[in-house]
Image (tube, rainbow, N blue to C red; front, side, top):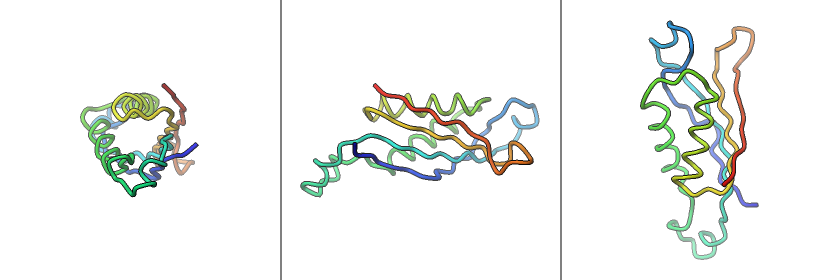
Length: 116
């Protein structure tokens, strides 16, 4: 299976369940693995057949930062749904990490896999 990868996509947003969290921006870090048949793009060096990681990154940044979200689980589900529905990705693995959420840990996070 071919994959398109985006690692460490940093997105500033309002995220959290506590009142103090709802008043400040925090950074989430996303890692994405997206199934995509790269043969058509590679065969003719044709950008129009590629899954554009820049377009994906911009769309996900908009999606996550457009309104406050309480849970990183919600972020992961929204990202997966967006990729499956808007970009027609057949399978995706989404990891969402929230640095600094637990003082004794570098980051906490969730990882999900979804498919059409």
